[in-house]
Amino acid sequence: MKNSTAEKLLVAAGELMIERNSVEISLADIAQKSGVNAALVKYHFGNKDGLLLALLERDAANEMTHLDFLLTQPLSPTTKMKLHIAGIIKAYHQFPYLNRLIHYLLHGSNREAADEVTKFFVGPLLDFHRRLLAEGVASGDFREVDPVLFYTTLIGACDHLFFGRQTMMRAAGVGPVTEEVCRAYVVHIEKIVLGGLLTNKARQPSADGS
Image (cartoon, rainbow, N blue to C red; front, side):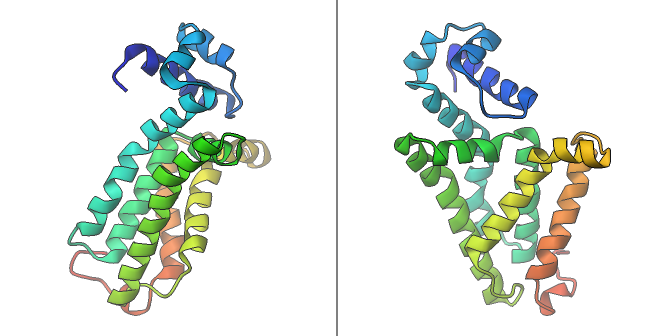
């Protein structure tokens, strides 16, 4: 978003959610963090849900715009899936509140916001999974997998690394999610997902190295 005042509000909201590990932030909190009058939220976004929706659209835009592009690339379905897994996890690493923000907007009282999230995030991502899984089945790379269950598995796994990290820090003494942890998680999820997805045929090395 090019407007500097609106961008300040978005940045403040994102930073607050990361600091508090929660999407429960108030307009007063956002105004204080940004140094912008809370009344300007209504001017730029209509209300708090409008601001949070704009934040989600901003943060998810890069990954969502690459979905169709990835499908058209001359790569094996396995390589495309690896790239998608890495892209999703990296997006969650950069914006660890993403999935909680999605749930907040989807299940809140604002039905227009819920419809917008479905239209620009959930729907396109689920459709991408359907298409890529079908491509993999057609090529003999993937076994038959329910796209809804696949979406639930992958997106849930991405979210929990960040959402559940505070619990794991207390229970197991692990540290915060660093770049190194993020890279290790990409490899781990690739192995878990592809281990259940690939056919015996696809486990053989291919020309593109997948």
